[in-house]
Image (tube, rainbow, N blue to C red; front, side, top):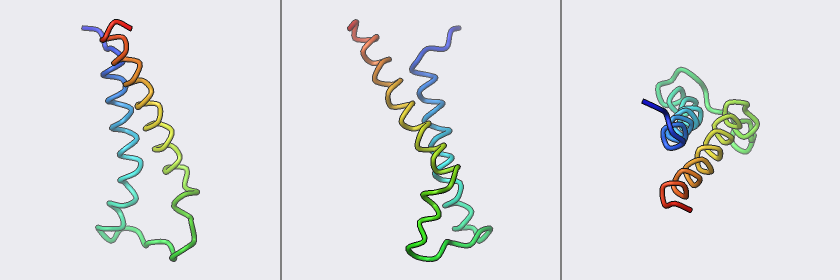
Length: 72
């Protein structure tokens, strides 16, 4: 069994979503405190940027996989 671009993009998308969701989950369960309003710390978080980059990569890979499946 070979792993194609579709499976790779789904994996990257899942990991990217987990990077976005992990801080939210920690705040909802009371394990972490929320940043003060307007601080913008969540946008400067390396975890947030990792999630953003992985999600964008997954979107592009999914588009390439769809084009290959369509024969284009």
